[in-house]
Length: 293
Image (tube, rainbow, N blue to C red):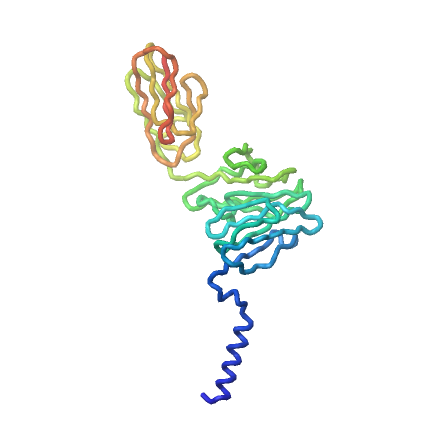
């Protein structure tokens, strides 16, 4: 290679290096990305590199007609959110933080079954149309449920999203395939069930009469089943292995929801010793009852 070509090559390398931020070559710097949802809802700082261990300050600025709600980060298995604004933290690992802005007077839809959810339901998906960042009260959306292979759906339920855990939300069944947005944030969830049939076996001794209703050879996950138990006079009935979701309807009558597996209920008896009804603490997700006649 002659001197002219060598000089040209060196010049090209120098130009490329000057175009790349020096922070790219710093092993002790952490990349912090920032974004917003929706993009026209407000402004956030540019993504940048920060020295490891330094304090990062991110401030979200809503545009007119929008309100800042929270920062969230779902990258690399992190499930994090904060309403702090500005949000300050120590640069330790790369992060992607998104500022969520709400359009004034509109509300959010959330669901573990949306296909874009960080933890999508592996039994199927729920899609809504039209897809928007937020909805005004009175907006009508169309619901489409797509069960995964081996599963069916019993429709969609909704509940008020006031920031509580989904486990604490009271859900209501949505009739049909449309939903009208109320004046609140909303949780939506599709009800999926396994289409593989399962059995419930009863093992009973001679001093107890019991039955299941409806009486069928097999059941599907989510079926509501009633167990009726009647011990002979002077005997106490022990019911073992009730599913953890059972409830007591009346004296000797129990309701439970079928689980996605075969299981056996054991109903035994013992001579009367005193108390009429005694509850035994559930073990490993199963419950037990004692009923005296």
